Image: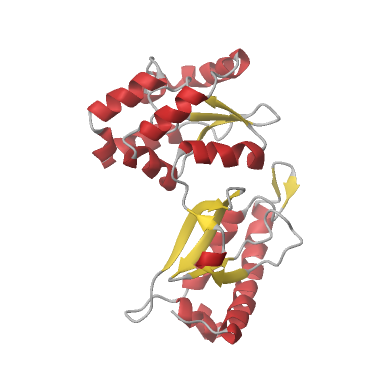
Length: 261
């Protein structure tokens, strides 16, 4: 798919206008993230909202250049992607053919342009292929300490990490489709690898989790006991990596937990 320099400029301008519309919707809803003002830390929400606006039929009426991003039989699909940017950040972007489109380019450094378009090969974007790689990025980027998931060991083959922020709020990682795929495609070997590497969480974190989990005694996936390593081995033997229905059960169980504990 060829996009000329002139078209790149026009696309950036049109997407920047959609981004302004997205900001009007999102800024009141998400004024802060971890104490930082919007748009910092809101790359997923911004990417998703701009994508939604872009897919509306009237978007290319208002900005005809956007028509080249609309999927047709002659044009490739515009895809939302999540992954690593130079192994420094987690990144939510869009990709169409060999082009990389970032409509939330200012969510780490607010002084950067809102929108960036470039050939994918120059972007520094890549898929995350292991939980070790995820941990390598998460620790400095999110400024968190990482521990093995011993609090919900039945979830650990899918969500092997406990992240603990500076304010001692903790959560399980990584609850997104991409990392669930890493767990399943590796037959739970990648989660087991990071579980074996990380320390157990401190007692006060375990206590906070136990207080929450006591309220969910009816959800067995949240309250089963055992070791995270044993569950990885059990799920591999049971071929749970091939079982999308079981994956959905894991996600549903996880959804009952608070976003931060």
